Image (cartoon, rainbow, N blue to C red; front, side, top):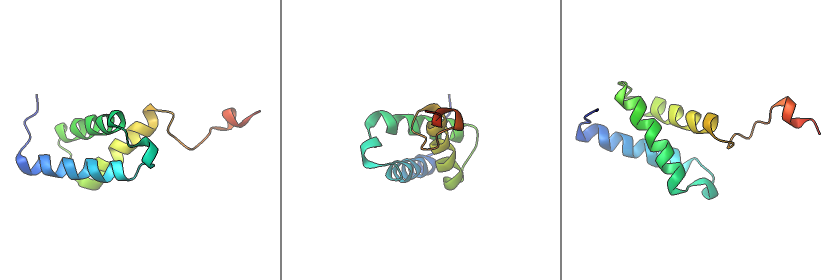
Length: 79
C-alpha cells in the first residue's frame, strides 16, 4: 500500500479538482470523480509527480474506459 506525503495529497487533490472541472457539468458526478481519483492515485503510486501528466493520464483513462469519448470510430458512423 502506498503512503503519500501531505504535499502529494494536496497536489493530487488539486489535480482531481482540475480534471473534474474539465468535464461537462453533467459528467461531474461522484462516480466519475471517484474514477478519476482512482487513476490519479494509481499513477502517483507508480511515482508520477507532474500535475499535468497526472491529469492527462487520469482523463485519458476515463475516456478509454467509458463511452465518454466524442470520437466516433468509422465503424460506428456507418448507418
